[in-house]
Structures are given as C-alpha cells and as structure tokens.
Amino acid sequence: MNIHVLPPVVYNKIAAGEVVDRPYSVVKELVENAIDAGATQINVEIEQGGKRRIRVTDNGGGIAKDELALAYSPHATSKLQTADDLFAIRTLGFRGEAIASVAAVSRMQIVSRTQEGEAYSLACEGGVLGDVQPAAGAAGTVVTVDDLFFNVPARLKFLKSDAQEEADIGSVMARFLLSRPDIAFEYSADGKKKYRSFGDGLSAALVAVYGAEALANCTQIRAEKHGIRLHGFLGNRNYYKANRTYQSLFVNGRYVVNQTVGAALTNAYASYLMKRQYPFYVLFLDVPPEIVDVNVHPNKADVRFADNQVIYGCVYSIVSAVLDGNSRALEYLVSSPQTAQIPVRDTLSKQPPRFEAPSAQQEPAQAPAQTPVMSYAQAKEQIAFDVTIPKGQEPHFLDDPVRMEVRQPAPRPAPAEDVFAQNQRLLREQAARARQERIDPAFLEYKGELFQTYLIYQAGDCAYFIDQHAAHERVLFDRLQAAMDARKVASQPMLVPFVLTLNAQEFAFLEKNFPVLRELGFEIEEFGDSSVRVLAVPADLMGMDLNAFFGEVLSSMESLRAIRLVDLLRDRLATAACKAAVKGGERLSEEEVRALIERMDGDVGMKCPHGRPAVVRMKKSEFEKLFKRIV
Ligand code: ADP
Ligand code: MG
Image (cartoon, rainbow, N blue to C red):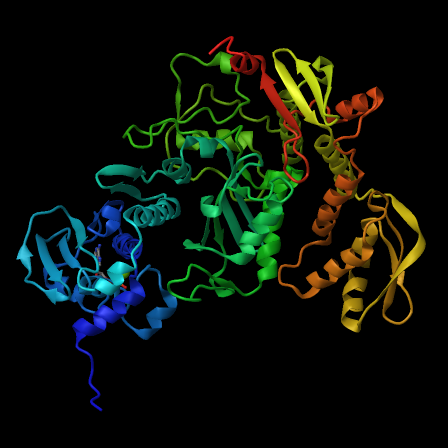
C-alpha cells in the first residue's frame, strides 16, 4: 500500500464538506468573519439561492496586503495564538478553516483595505490561488463566492432548489439581525431587498425581520433569576403561528434549538394555544459560561446545560408569569402591547426610527400638533414610570438608544409613592384596560340559541356567538385556578381512601412533597411500610384518576423536565373543567344561560383552557356583505 499525505487541494475539498455543506453555511461563515472584524455595517447579496453568487461586504478592520494569502490557508487565523486562548474565545470563528474550505470549492475573491492601507484583491479558483493585485475599495472587506461547488458535482447535486436555499439563507440572516441588533445589516436576494436593519436596537430589528405587527403583538421582558438572564420578546396569548419557524432562542448570543428551553416555553403557553398553534418568541438566555456546554457539535445548533431542571424552571416560571399576567410579571415586563414602542417606519426606507408614545396612559386628546422630542434618558424615565420596576433591580428598559417622540412628557411619579403602591396602581390600570376590552354584559341582548350549542347575543352593531361548552369550561377553569393560586382549595373526603404502594425512593420523594400536596387540597399521609394514603382530594378534582395523577408525579421525580406539581395540576384542572362543563348539544335553561353570561363578565375575547375561542363576533357589516347589501 502507498500511504501518502493528501495534497492540500484535495484535503480542503474534503474538509469543505464539514464546514460548508450549503450556501447558507457559507453566508454564516462570511458574516461571522465580518462581525469578528468589528464591522458595524454588513451587506449580504446573493443570487440564485447563493449557488451563483454570495457577496458579503463589511466595514470592519480589513486584511493587510501581506496577510491576504494567509487568510486562504487552512488553519490560518488571527483569532487564536496559543492553546490557552481556546478557553477564552470571544470571536465567532477560531478554527481558521472557513475561508480555505470555501475557496477550495468555489471561485472566491477577497478585496480588502485596512484603515491605513490601500485596497488589494486576491482571487482563488477551486483552491488555486491567484496573485495579490491592487484594487479599489473602501476600508473593510468584500468577499465574493461565485459558483459554489462548481468543481464538486456530487455536492452540487445535493443542493436544494434556489427558493429553498434562499429561504434558508433568509433564516440565517434573520438570526443575525436579531442576535446583533447593534449592527446594521442589509440583505438582498437576486437584487431584491429582503432585510434592512440600522443597528438601532432589538425592537427595531424585530420589526425589520417580522414587521411592525409582530412587535405590536409582543411583550418585551427582561428577567434575572439565580444568575440567569432571560430577555427578549414573547408573542402574546392570542398571537400564534402555524409552525415553529417563528421561535428564536439565543443562548449566550448563539442561536440554538434546545429541548429544555423549548419544552418550558411550550408548557408555559399550553393553556392558551391549541394543538398546531405555535407561540412566537425571540428570546435571549444568558447563563454563566460554566453551566453551559456549547460544543455539542460545531454544526449542531444546540447546547447542553449542567442542570436542565434549573433552566426549565427558570424559563417556565418567568414566561408563565408574564402570560398569566400575575403580579410577579411586573418584575419582568419591559413593555407590553399597550406600552409597546412601535417604530412606524417602512423597514426598507432609510427614515430615522420614530416611535409611538410609549404608553396608552397618555391622553391622546392632548396630543399637541408639534410633538416634543424626548431625550433617551427622559424616555427611559417615562418607561420606568409606565412599567414600575422593583427597587434595586437593573432598569428594565428598552435597550434602544434611539430618539423617541412622545405626545406629552409624563408627570414624574410622586416621590411619596413607593414601589408597592406603584405596583398596585399599575395592576389597577391593567385591570381597567382589560375591562375596556370587555363589553358590559348589560348591553348583551340574548337572541336565542343555535344547534343547542351556540348562544346568540347582540350588542350594538355586533352579533356574538358563544360556544356554551368552551365558555363554561373557561369559567370553571379560571375559578379552579384562582382557588389553587390562593391556596384556598376545598378538600373533599373520599369514601374509600386511596392507597399507593411505593418503593423507598418514591416514598421519600412524595413525603418531601406532602406539604405542597396538602396546600393543594390533598389530605395525604404515611400508611404503613412505604405506602401513602390519600383521604381527601381537591373538591374540584373529585373523581380524578389518582393512579394516573400519582403516576405522573412520580415519573417527573427523576425526569430532568420535572414540572412543578401546580403545573401538573393545572393540566388536571383543564381536564376536570372540561368534564364538568356543560356540553354542546345540551339545552340550557334560561337561568343557566343567564348565569353563564354573568360569570363570563363580558369577556368576549375568551378562549377555552385548550385555546379554542369561546366567542365569535360578527359585525353587522359582515352580514350585510354576505347578503350583498354592501360590497
Ligand atoms: P477564522 O474565522 O476561524 O479565523 P476563517 O477561515 O474564517 O477562519 O478566516 C481566516 C482569517 O481571515 C481570519 O482569522 C481573519 O484574520 C481573516 N478574515 C476573514 N474574513 C475577514 C473579514 N471580513 N475582515 C477581516 N479579516 C477577515
Ligand atoms: Mg471564520
């Protein structure tokens, strides 16, 4: 046999498959290089899904003339000197293989100019270097990759359609816009502008990627717990998408898809969304580097946490507090849809960002013709006033150092009002806003029922169709949950006590949880040798399947995604509410109808605990359209 070292051209062709397998990975590597070079403006142009051309232009530090050739050689990097540096990597690249790999399988050209120097270019075709030549260009670097895989037909065959490749590049770009809202990006495909951001903050980047509608439907949060920081945007309870592609998670700045965090979010949204409805979020999770392992696989977008349970619990509790709108959420809110800053610019035009008044609390009637411009510092104060923040915490402001226009500068809060009083006031205001969205039940005129399932009401110009089952289910669920939250659960003794035989571990686990279970309305006690006996259960859950319930509790004992008992019970509650609620097809007496509508308290935006709408509204004009009275 004839063992020999592969010539670099061959070796690099093989290595190219590792680092770059598709056009989007080329885009990713080149943009990361531009970011590492300190660029504040990065433009990306592609043609034919990146197969024909990928060009990345940046205004970063550039590459000196005599280092151009080095940039192309494998394992040449400016980002790592010694092995020790490996443990303190602050750049995105460090292996020094991206450029060499891409150059081996394409026609590549780098034109670069450092701040002090002149511009030079160096081309490389299928791994064969040309000569360094003088060129024209601004400070920074332009990397052009033409005809990717032109010399590797096998790889070419595995590329997807232009449209699919372009879509994947679009996702990569969207992530860059979101994860680096401090950098201005421009991305175009076949000459058409797709994204444009201005480096002016996360809200603006969110709008650049998803449009103003998304921002208007999101709550901005910033939370810190046990040294873990979670911030970003959460789609509100009624804003859902048909798939998961609207979910972005960045762990310590890196885009990842992670089971633990994903499950925490899915479960937090569970009672608001139906099957096949996916929440929208753009979230940044920052954890101490020692509790996260990012090197699962260089090409896999996942991370491993030292303790999944801590991460799960932390994310779940923050997100569900915000979604449930309970008082803890106050700590985490930066802005909610009511107070959201909505940039009203066309995302592709170069107007400076303008913002709506930060709060719905301002009197719109007072809007003066010429709107005073607030300084950033004033705007922060304004937001601090709108969304009170517990003492001693870092301010949870929008991170956008942008000009904001407000209609009326806010009065300073009276110094006498302490944080607690402010919180109370905010809660009252929130409740008042929620009430505004309701309609006064007194205005609801009962018009009859349809199919023994839908109750028909009229209020002014609107007809309301209420699904009696869904509405009743929600009403029951809310009542059960309120009782549970208030720890005022009534217990109901069982005729025959339920006995559970356990092994030592299970017993120890349950025993530890006795106090919680008791608070939740279970009467539970030790019963002989590692057995427990349940004498009473929460009254609202009478008739629940205790075998199944404790089975779940015990199975979560070891699982890393252990859910709090309360959350497990919340699921049970939804089921119990569903069982106890009046069914569709059951004719209700007049009294029952009245009782139901009273308990709904005019909440016409109501959804059942599984996320189905309980009320459908149709305007008079919609009827008129149906009958072609109006067009
Ligand atoms: P790595 O990023 O892992 O160092 P690359 O092959 O991607 O390896 O790049 C090799 C080197 O080329 C980098 O270390 C950097 O010095 C230089 N380089 C690449 N792209 C740029 C750029 N856009 N601006 C400045 N220098 C660059
Ligand atoms: Mg690199």
